View 1 (cartoon, rainbow, N blue to C red):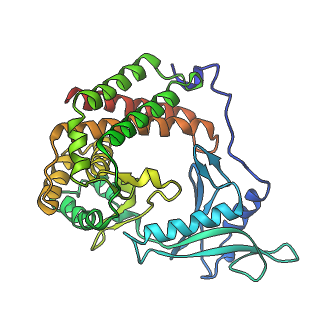
View 2: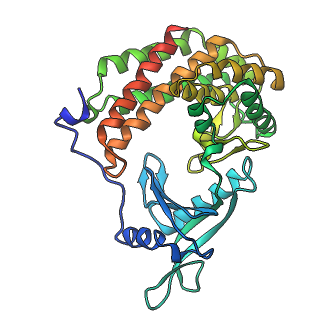
View 3: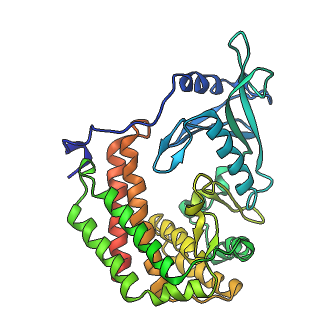
Length: 350
């Protein structure tokens, strides 16, 4: 059943929206608001932020959003998360993440970026990169090959090797997997989303079965010390094919979402490349990873991680129904169901 046909669909929980947000967005849409005297500004709204693009820079304004452990509800929390975003993303994009700037207002009510007035909000300022350099654009243009995958792995393998190792026992890691599965299933089965509850339950059971019956594959990763603090969101649109590769937009708001087996992160990237119609990237990514990292993960483990990631991404897709400002609702229903179908496909390989 589509979300549009669902009687529960209109019962949405709204993000916190203080009255000043509209005024801030209106100000940041104006070219004359920027210190570089921009000729134009392109504004992009996402689920949790606004992005304002000038010719040279990108300015990110976090929405006053609070939900599921994410807290941008106050200026102080937004400042804290802006600083985290700057620090964490400099690990893989040092020359892109420039600084955190205050959005200020003076006694006459005039806003400014890094002005002399009172800070009312905070912006992450980044150097703007050409979208044509993203892996996503390369996938769409058909210009990505095995050499591209090796180039990306040449950036990621040293990053994972130098990342902080997280101490966890095999038992705790299995519990973590079970928790991730359960949390996604509970959300996906919410009646207002009108997804197929029997399918979700079946996929959840199959994922749990892998953890229970083939958990030794997970145990081996933990014992070998592969659990690290990584990036957390390796999507093709976050990877720029510069030299070396530049990778942006890691998860800053929840450290737990950055804790992964590197193979799980790469399985997520491979799954997203599958969605772009380029399944051959999977073989290229893991061939380069094996060569550069000296790590040969079992194929069953990769497919499990791909299935788990697809299942969890279905939950994130359907959450967009709770935000009326993120486009037509039907697109998120379609996307969630696509991720669920991919979950089923990967599980068939196990």
